[in-house]
Length: 88
Image (cartoon, rainbow, N blue to C red; front, side):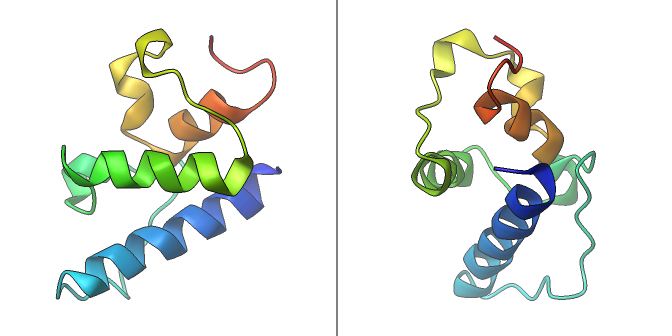
């Protein structure tokens, strides 16, 4: 999966999760290097749902024990986890 398509799908999913939680983030800009936790759109609880979505979207299992914590902060970091030859 190309990074642009990945980013668009994950941003759409994040915004839907926030909408479902009663928060309007429709105008929030999320770039590949945006810290999702600092922005407040991902929490320690919602990251698990996001990882499950990414695994389903890409058909790639993410081995959480093999990844660096800071990879989870941004879309770019998450993309590297599922990209062949990514940060492993």
